[in-house]
Image (cartoon, rainbow, N blue to C red):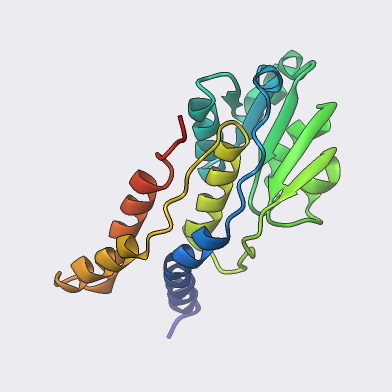
Length: 202
């Protein structure tokens, strides 16, 4: 059995664990205190990949008071960061573009799972995610969910449904399919996106 296949299987197993740990995570997630409307006008959320999606969600849930930007854009136009507070999102805390951009800012906060990461070290402060960063390469189910909810909660009060029936229904529906448990992953991701990230206290 090749090393690549073993790595692939370890990644699948880690991702499966992520999926089935989501209900437990949602029960213990602690939302952050939202920034004031005045503070939000001077805030930029920045990240790449999934982290950029978290930044975009922050912008949308703030009614576009905060801005989302790619760290490379901050590096290209350094004047953007003047008098701004930048929230850099990186699960690993080792994203090079984030680290370089953080070095040119005067006020920055790292949102990461690794408290002693390079990003955390160069930022003025850090928000450490409770998710335990996995060495296994995965699609980042829980890590994305926590970073997204954290970013949203910084700009708006949120309501998280703690209803195990949602997850149980996804499992039940998946078992009825010939794809079995694999379909459950897709169902739960869809359910998480539609029922968790989109619920907002008005």
